[in-house]
Amino acid sequence: MNTFGERFRLTTFGESHGSGIGCVIDGVPAGLRIDENFIALEVDRRRGGKNVYSTGRKEADEVEILSGVFEGFSTGTPIALLIRNADARSKDYESIKSIFRPGHADWTYYQKYGIRDYRGGGRSSARETVARVAGGAIAKMLLDEVGIICESGIYAIGGVKAKILDFENAAQSEIFALDKEVEEEQKALIKQARNSHNSVGGVGIVRARGKKGNMIAGLGEPMYYKLDGAISAAMMGLNGVKAVEIGEGMRASEVFGSQNNDLMDKGGFLSNHSGGVLGGISNGNEIVIKVYFKPTPSIFLEQKTLDINGENAICRLKGRHDPCIAVRGSVVCESMLALVLADMLLLHLSAKMENIKKIYG
Image (cartoon, rainbow, N blue to C red; front, side, top):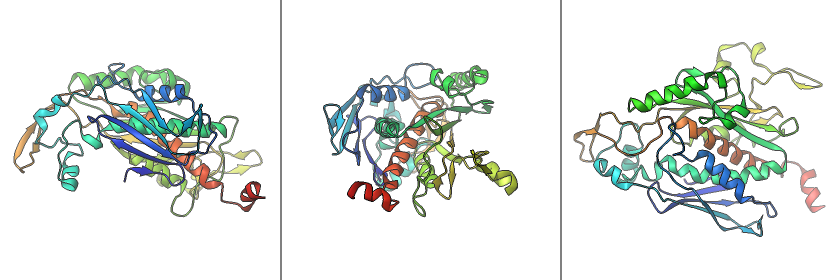
């Protein structure tokens, strides 16, 4: 499946070393102002090759709008976006054309399709996420119209965890670090992994909040398209994500109900252990998610593997790879949250008769 969402739908296409990556966004209401500069800024945030903490692949990632926009506004028809690949080096992968890279999707894609696209992982490459970020920028424009902001940052690199969550620092940081006090230690760990031809895992935090206070309450479609279920599916659908927590997450299994319940008074909720979601529906609190990324499987150490004939082989990788996919991955998670919320926003319109009567009288 290459399509995501029910009402606000994103379909992506393309491979890591193909002509380009792109997406089609369907369901965007007509009349939404489309800011091309904002799309470029969002895509630039996830772009690698700018520092030692990401891949050396230097793609310009210029986004072409092919349809669905006229004189700066959405027309209500599908919006098609294209990002051309300009810095692919397929020759770097010649040495592994007949073997499977440990930790990658090479083996499973071959078992499913019987075709070995060895050029950077083909469709399973994280290169595909540039389309998700471009589409997420459109979703953010819609959310901005109703006062919703999505933010992200790095909580942990390896075992080095943030003690405070400062999203303003994350916006200025080379690695999107949430805590300035541990940022240098986190950077050092990434450098250590790179210098030893290895990689390291990390944890991103993503949140959605209201620009002027509370988040919108009521978003989510019980029973089988709950908000937390859709968010979890969106995050787990990203390459390298191995776990997702909403609110207290796993810690909720270790405490009593009296400690985990979010009490209320006339001023609202007194805590946010639920992460902004109750019964699969947003409750008006900030929506808070932790996303856990495994270490980048592309490392430059010799590893035992199999070839396509089932014989033992040694994997010796070349190429350009992120030493920590969590860094740029956190930006993609933010875009995925925006896509989920945009979808839920449109679905919510038909939840009450009063909403329908506002349109049809």
